[in-house]
Length: 92
Image (cartoon, rainbow, N blue to C red; front, side, top):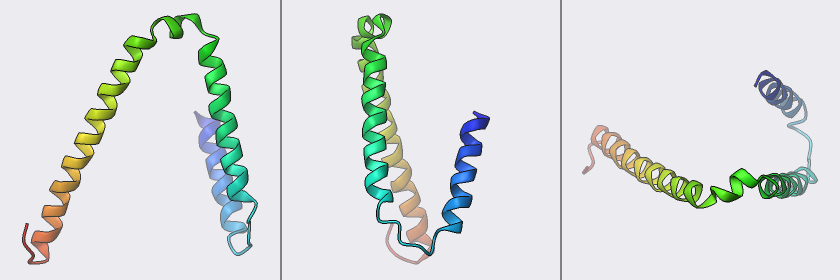
């Protein structure tokens, strides 16, 4: 975990150093690297028999987490919207 945080800090430092330069190649490179990481993750999951055999159970849990997270975020956003609009004198 410390390595991940250190890499992020290094990236922030380099990004702040290079922020006035045009880095047109950076966005396409990021996209290619994300696709490569997703492919490698798929290879890793596909090669693990335990994960493949429990995929239906994991899929249901993932669906429940995604729906619960989305509903929770929507409710929190509505709650915050009402609080912000009350302070401005608008209708809530």
